[in-house]
Each structure stands twice: as C-alpha cells, then as structure tokens.
Length: 314
Image (cartoon, rainbow, N blue to C red; front, side, top):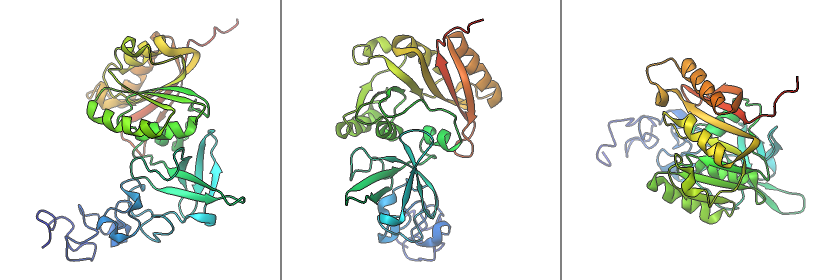
C-alpha cells in the first residue's frame, strides 16, 4: 500500500486511502481536516495546495482550511497587520491572529514559514513572515507577554546559540538595516544553514565559534545593546556573563532562555531557574523579569536582566 513503512501509522485515517492515508504522515490526518492540512500543510505534501507552510504553520491545520491566498492566511486586502507593543513586531489579524515580522528580504522564506503580503494604498506591497512560537523561544516569550525584549529597530544584538538561524532571521527583520545581529553558533552543521541565512541578510554576521571563548571572535563583534542567549548548556550563565563582560555596554540587557533539563535534570524547574538568576546576579546582571514559556515549551523560562545597572541613589 504505497511506500514501505508509510501505511501502518495513520493509514486511511485522513480518509484519503492510497498512500498511507494522504493526510496521514504519522497519524496526523484527522486534525487539520484530512486534506493534507495536517501539520501546517505537510500531510500529503500539502495535497497540492498551500504547501507554502512547510512545518511553519503553527501545528495542526492552520491554513489547511481555505488554503486562501498564498498558502494559508488570506493575503491581500483582507489581512490587517497591526504593530505589536514591541517595536518591529507585528500581529496579522485574520481567521487566526499570527505573530509576524516585516520581511527584510521580500519573496524569501527562511525555514518554510508562511508569508503574508499586504497591499498598500500607493500600489506597493509589504511582506510579512509568520513567526512560529513552537520553533522560536523569543516568539514564545512575546506571545507569553514578556514586558521587554530590548530588541528594536536599530539595535545591536549578540545572539548566542543561533542554530540554523530560524529566530535570527526574525531578529534580523526587527532590527532592520540600521541594526546588526552577531550570530554565534558552534555546530558546523547548523552553521552552514546560518551562513546561508546571512548571505541574503546584510545585517546578520555569522560566527561559527564556541560561545565559551569570546576572545576568539572579539575582532568581529563591537559593543552591543542586548545579548540574547539560547545555548542550553549547564554553564550557560557563565557563557552569557563572559560575553557580557566582553561586548555588552553598561546598562545593556540580556534575554536568556533557560531549559531546566539541561542544567539539572533532577531538580525542580523552579529551583533551577532561581539558581540561574542567582548566578547571573553574581556576574553583575540583575534579573528584571522571569517568564515561563508554557504552552509552547515545557520547563523552559526566559529571564530578562540588565547588566551593571547604575547604583541606586540613597
């Protein structure tokens, strides 16, 4: 029945029969209406329609339904894009509200995410890219209601743990041509993808180096306003601190994503987060807010802090 190893899971469940139930692909089918909607237009390779979504489309049939416009969110005049509280971040209002950033490189998706075009009155078009909170800790923090991300148009950001450049591309959209993102990633495999992202985005500087040794890339990085860290290492507080000592301006900010499991898989997540905050305090980083990333990530938190805050006048 079609390709080997395809049929048993989810077979016949999307009601497609034939190749392992079209929408099947791991027993999704049903969700997203069997129509290849599945996970944001995977299923039967998107059933020929709305394949735009890759895995981007917010799990489960978002954009399955209408397949309207270009792969999902109806494009054109129907879509209203409103600025978010954080400068450079936007919300696309439609059948479902979606977090988006203004695409710096029009016509290009970075990781198969959906794009939304909005027609302006003067006949020109603006393009936005959907920002999936399940694939980006920063998007999860924004949707979770974080008070400040300290990343705005014109910011200089040092991004530790850039991986393949999924979130980096959105940070690049936010800071715009006036800003710059120094993206540090140790893995060569992810680094290749990161470099490909940077080829098209002039404000991304890829650095394939271990973030534990900032002296190795000190010639490439200037002083930055904000450090964003998603390194998932047991000593990540130390990694962030030595990078802050090298590159972060006084009263600059850090945004750090903490995965409790990576630091101590035996302790309670709350205890781990509290311990990390104490380590940051010891390095002259004062935590200002802490936020869980539920429902997007399990046992993750984001901590926002300020580096070397000015002494309080007594």
